[in-house]
Length: 116
Image (cartoon, rainbow, N blue to C red):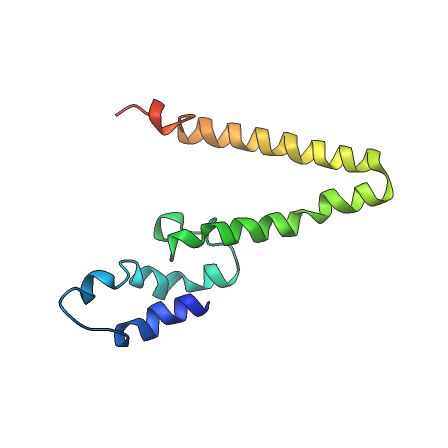
């Protein structure tokens, strides 16, 4: 959030010169409208095409993995078999969801294989 505050409010006052306009963020209007997605760590799920600070997508993904991790770790603590079962269920869910999204959106397995 500190980076977003710096970009939205303070960066315009931090420099000057003929090249200063090229340093200003291109997604400032996106940040003004979708800053809250970064605050909630859902910036990689909501309005992906209008993402504020595109490089921050990983912070959202990392937080989502952190929230999901107890579903795998806690069962391992009580019984390893339950832990393996929960990990297996999450793995199968991941594979099925990825497959469904790939077919529905017609995603290619690689950008190299994409048709123009």
